[in-house]
Length: 374
Image 1 (cartoon, helix red, strand yellow):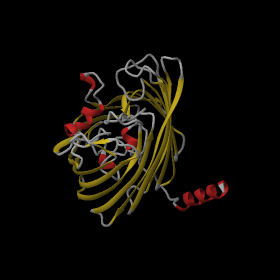
Image 2: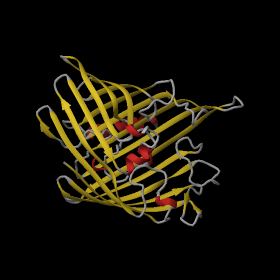
Image 3: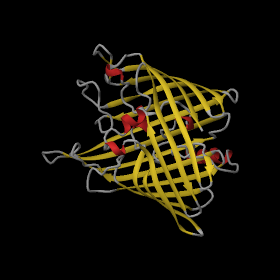
Image 4: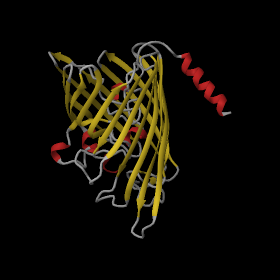
């Protein structure tokens, strides 16, 4: 049976072989820019109105950092993107603002809470594509970044919300061939600019483009996650794999799966290994160059509450559930996108709160969005 599935996989890959490359939209490096000599400048604004039918306390839709405010018009993410590039040096500075920044950078010191990216890169050899970048850099984990315009759905999946959106450290890049790129990272930790312990983490990324329409990506992470606030944590191990198919075509799709293991030691010296993981599949169909419909199915498992802390104090277990979504996309202009998405959440235990304090195991959420980039 395994042999049959392996042969079928190879046949599917071979079927889509053409020329060219797929952009890896897990990074934030796809915003258009205006060249000023070796300097380029761009901007991005993501506005939204969200409505959670549970009418949650404090108007916060739970379990996410992207576009999470209920019943208000707001800015999810707005930034200025300044880049410098020459044959041997590159640099990038991206200050950001919005509710995404408020939620995702809440643990950082005040002067660091508005840095989407700030990095400097040097090409180490004149005749080789080997780059060393240092600073606050984009994360390679999962098939989604914080930049909604690059993705098939407006909202971010659980997958992206519970891995780092940004990393701090150094990144070494190798172009191995026209189809294969390899990156290795030495980092402060899982997602932090200011260091939270004495250890450093290591991550790797492997990109493979067998065709012009297909990207396969594999990431790994190893590092200590012991901090003052999570002093039971020890080593964290994580790996994800995702694919991106035909992102500019009439039909496009992406899928991601990952698993993490957190080592923990408690006061009675007992050790415990806690697992969490997820899987998601997203597809999009363009009816015309202007109109498209996309959908997502996902499931997230975190029984030991490593990633997701319940907003319901009486919930006995961690998060076990997912969502199903539909998103209507209208490309108003080349650089303006309007979207309406409805997302239905479900959990095995009662993980959602209504405004009256009642705990339930489902949630309905509708978000309207307009995004522009220039």
